Length: 385
Image (cartoon, rainbow, N blue to C red; front, side):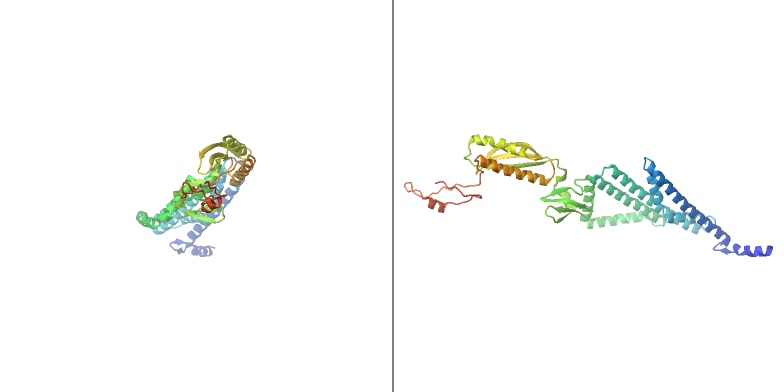
């Protein structure tokens, strides 16, 4: 019995890469058991927290579930192999290599955990903002910048563990970054302008804005340019740098729309009638929906008529409501003026005919018509002899 047992044990005592076959078996078994145990613990923990999360008022359970789900199997496998390697006799160089690989895997996993935390934070803060598009945009930009900074740090730490001189690398990247920045300064200017737009929020997606006479609805705010859908239908693309240099009118955030218009009546209008015109205009405006009358005054003696300046407000931001109200006001003014026999003024010019002697007869009506210069934009010019 002794000889067969010894013969069976003898292969296990043979050396393989500095360790017995038995030691390798124990190490692999330990690593496999550790990996299965970690995977099992991960799954059980996820199920337990998912069941408990809906019943708790806090979001800690949701964060725990998100962090557990972001734990990658490669990280659990590396930890298991590290644990199994403790059962083996290893040279110092091999231990250092395995430890470096474990540290790199841990750094990557920590980066994944922190990335998930940033994403979870952005979602939570976005929900608390009440669905405001500008706040969500700002939060998404901050989260994006946070992820870039995070993974930059992780990359530098990984390179440092691989033996790369990070100080020299950072210095070289700094010098190269300056050269690149100078060559692409316009692009970088647009990128920083995009960050300024997203943080300062002069407008958000969906706002109607006016940029130097271009009126359109914001469809997208990119890192290089902003896209507007103009009122005439075409897509207008404006670089973010040029956008911030312009005066931007955000029609979407207007509480009211102030409207000023001027009308003129002919000089032959009686003074009593002139005095009734502001009251007449006020009555017409007050009868319209979504309007608030401000003032109406006899404002000036114009070149071709007596001018009345009127100001009123549209109490909503809808451009169609403004145009509907303005149309009704103008139509009603035309009707009331026609009923009151009030004539609108139009540009005219009086031409004095000279060249005839003192005793000469004045030109006839037909001759005056031939000599007169007609400059009226509406109707006929009136010539006075």
